[in-house]
Length: 311
Ligand SMILES: Cc1cc2nc3c(=O)[nH]c(=O)nc-3n(C[C@H](O)[C@H](O)[C@H](O)COP(=O)(O)O)c2cc1C
Image (spheres, rainbow, N blue to C red):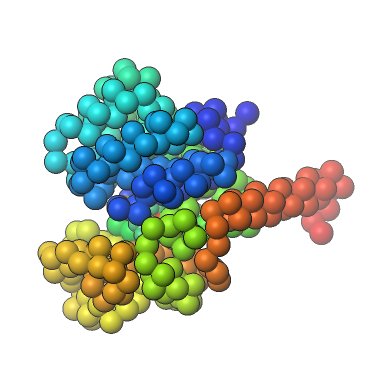
């Protein structure tokens, strides 16, 4: 039995990444309806709006999860709300989950923590998390400046821990999913792929910028300060790249990127995986194609194993 499916109630081990303002009920319910697991973000800091989105998902009866970005939570309000909402699955990120584990588990919630390094993974497992989201440096969003690729990080963590792993960073299809499973993952999480989906609430310019991007189309920025991020190469991020530092108000215009379509209003977060995305597709197609391609590859591997050959 796939432990991520048992923990989440989803039909397929395909998770939609938490993303500020983007990962709300329109996208999350499309993903969950298509058999994956939608996640509702709380990193926007818009407590009331996020609570409304969570209530919408609870009312839908679909499986889903909530992300709690520990360092960005202003107070306990969201944690308390999540514990009282009948939610089954939470991912924590950005900070130590130690203090969150006891109240979440007391509420019967399964907790996975997002980790960018082996050390953090080991600490989180000691602290009692049920699973890990293993985030390689090629992914979009806030990153650890000491970036390790998904390929290496998954193997390093799988070698040392037994909890279920969700692989994130650089995955857009069944090929990436099969690779992640070969390295020990039991599920994948996709961010950039779902930003460029039909049901994603972002402006068409942002989706098109992802479709147009090459695999060299992103930068790791602000690596000597915090937050270190991976974002699309734009005029706005070129300035940060050249300065080597990002101003404290750089994200003030983020909604201008997301909903206004101004690609130079703030850093447009995206992973290297943007270079693997060639069209804006429906969530249903993305998930169905990913599952079909994964199963075709798994079938080929099964045939190779049965015949003891490598062809
Ligand atoms: C636009 C965007 C926003 C993101 N915002 C968040 C966030 O608010 N919280 C979080 O934990 N991760 C965030 N991430 C990171 C994702 O959770 C995920 O790890 C990453 O997208 C995986 O790599 P991929 O983009 O190659 O799929 C964001 C990623 C993107 C692309």
